Length: 360
Image 1: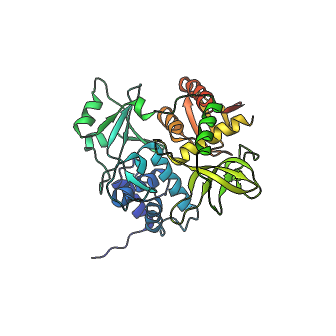
Image 2: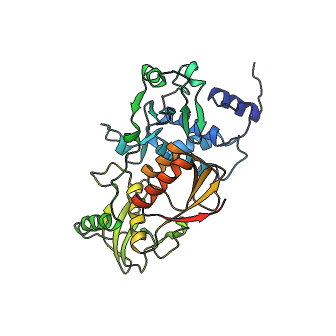
Image 3: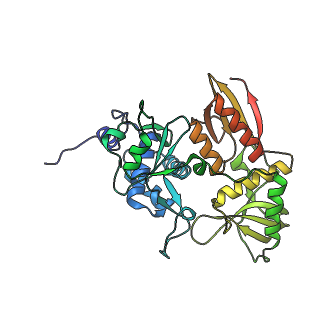
């Protein structure tokens, strides 16, 4: 017998199957979308981001009232899960399949990271399974933005229980590894030397550049054509298939003289991470460092950013704080007072950022 069910019943059933706490809600919120991205990744990965996004847009087309922002929301969550460790990009894995493209994402194996306060981050995706922990542990998993946490009970060796379930332990030091702090001029000098060693480029059409003359507080508005530009710029050059390639380009009167693609062959970072880090150094050298805003909210500090953060920096805010809805900025996090001071020092010394302070 076939029974007709409503849209709300479908969404409530999805939340229950995915193990979400608010099972009575029929809203396509971030928690549901995040869980669905993980579920779809377990089915389709390894695959392109486009495949992952399209699979969810198609599945939700009759459940979201034709929401025009749905593809962008899903794309942002895919990026967030790469930062959070549930999805891996090609430079994080070893494959022998020659057909695997550099733009594909992979489902990370189940693992965990123990925080200094005893809380444990759970990461990873298992193919065709919504939950890879027994009910006794799965019922204790809490959501904090894009991350999943479990708090230990009194006198409990929670890490050992997870290890016995086959999860791999990653040290906090390894998880938060970042490039060594150095003056921005040293970083720039190293990249400019590598760029100078590159051969002369042929014709490169439709290259975009991050224009240093445009406001550092409006990231999207900084992207512009290279027509008439001269100097060294963080850029994106198109390729026939796939997303544009991040690079450092030398231009003379709008013509590309040479370019250096990211990521470098010896780098463990993503191309965008190298590019964003380098742009921070370029802005600092120009005397217009990128900004962040800090605001006291009760007993926590809210950090607002106007440009993307490299993975190694954003992961620190995920580890020690949580994401919050952004207001007139690109991304926002809140941190407890003790962690805020440490992260401010990291932003100043490693990313050369400048603080805008506002009262709460």
